[in-house]
Length: 359
Image (cartoon, rainbow, N blue to C red):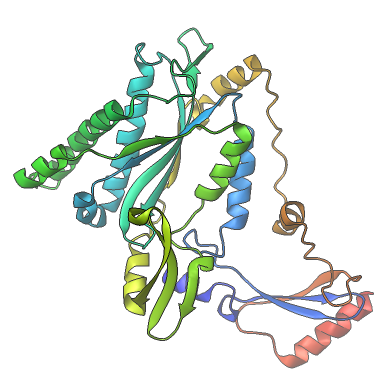
């Protein structure tokens, strides 16, 4: 993964040459690595994922719920990442399902979109899931049943925390047993004495705000390039929010080795799904979701053919990558591709002439 990020958009991955059909201007572009942990390769995947989610929105409010793990479990997350992160997904989603199924709280099947994040602002290990939940669900009769608490809260947070802790601890005990380990008595007491952090943020104003949120969180990585202040042969300096100081922005400087160590803790196992859908928002329940949308008078947005990243850049940001940046009138045309390293100068001269001949 680190090698892929290092080589991203460099001559090591090859690329292509575009030429203007009016002035002959040449542009060499190097290929992206496409790795999901790369800070430069998330935009296209994010926009396409969001476009698919737009057709699944319901005409209701949505809650943002966060489930976290105590730091005492961090070493187990490093030792058994797949098992622990799967358990985090399962315990949190089962908790919401349990409360939703209870007539006292709702008595309906809800839907959830869960996104796993494993980092804190300073790149420490801080596994948690961000969950988007509609404020209601589908009743046994097949009709929409709104939340009893309306916009005040989804379910009682303290009760959610206790049930979530119990579900996770049961799964954690089973995991240790399968690994021929026992849950240390001291650790068990610490985990049960702690209040496991579960909090629900204020509901979104509407479906549009949900999409904006998903855009920020769905394909987020441990640290983005805009937070990097300085990188040299010895250290890396970056900004972070210190939530213990009221979210004050501060600067942290780490050795290069320590920075890479922290970043590497957030590289997920190959094939691990960090975004998951449950209940009426799961793929297998699409017919039920469409029925609810019809009852709400929603006409789902039709899925269109995937557009190219060039078209997406133009639609979302107004940047026409196919227009010549030099003369502003010509069109950049793909002239040649290359596997690795920049093409020889002689080939570039030939490519320029080819572009002008096309004109």
